[in-house]
Image (tube, rainbow, N blue to C red; front, side):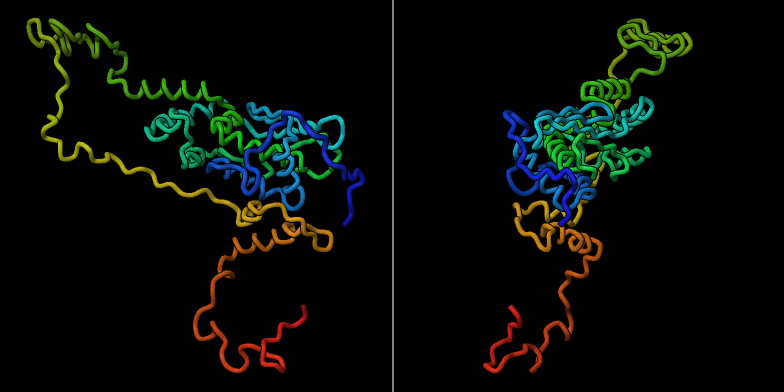
Length: 337
């Protein structure tokens, strides 16, 4: 196996108080949104760098991690004394894009309730897609990745470690994904509150709420109310509650769901993601890690799932003398060891 010229073969320097992944084995990321982000990572990084990046994340080699509009910045300690600087850029949406997104989210009570409760709706990507936008990066072409290490291949293991810890950051705070796209939690929730309040206001355009308000031309509500063009509703009349269907007449449908809940779908993941759930495998075949050699096969299984289907029909189970070749002793011939 050809090693790079810089050959960072020594173990990384230990970090006191570094950021460690909570997962000590198997998959990293517990929610659908972090899993969605990990799927992007595993589609652009294969082989040893992915496994070494996961080990870095679990050893606590990441010193710091900051998420801001359009940029994630981190420091990662390698085997050299000076930590490496890692930056991962993603296009942040501007004010016009976020204005359209916030209005679309506020128009749905489902999305507003989930976000105001601190949760990420499972189908929120559809809202972005309807406006021609994407929440998660679809490919490496949407990411600007750089690391100050001497490894000329990007992404390197230091960038991979940052990606894994970023996924767990998204687990803790799903709004960090939106902050990366340019809108922090406080600003988004304030906009949703304001838009929902404006949409639920019963007052007509130009009206002022409160006693003596004017909902129309020359209309005044309250004692001695005048409605329309100077028409008096009655001497000393006081406007009562708005007319509606009595509760006794709608008890049969009172608890009926007014609209069906949106149908959610599980997040799409790469078929090769199963390899990431394996414990560390220290098997090398002709200079290549075993997981790197298996990666193309697992991707092929996802593209052609029929190859794993069990055969059916008369030819499913061979029978007759040729079903099991046997040696002189009548036992199946195991062939070469």
